[in-house]
Image (spheres, rainbow, N blue to C red):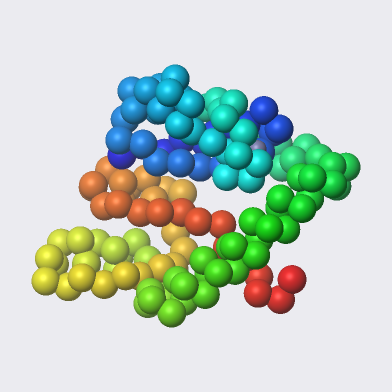
Length: 140
Ligand SMILES: [Zn+2]
């Protein structure tokens, strides 16, 4: 599995997993990739870049983008509620707990917590599948 940071034509950024780089190209050629914010099919790989300020600005300027973002945030709350109900929170112990579960096949458990970038990379190298999701505050 390989994770790419992707960009759409409207400068939205999101992450997605692929089995390898060929799969990404195949899906892109067949127009099967779309932006999770605006459904645009014009997707390209991006290198991690500090373009947050630019993205934020375009949300403020563009009403459509803003509505999309609000919609997406509502879904993120649903996502968060689901995770909290069905997953065990392990906080910053995520990396070691994920290993415990991975190497002890009897224990099938859903967990969530926080990792550092380095921990994520190590887990992925060991073949442990992870998913990163954006996390929203419930309050706003
Ligand atoms: Zn987009």
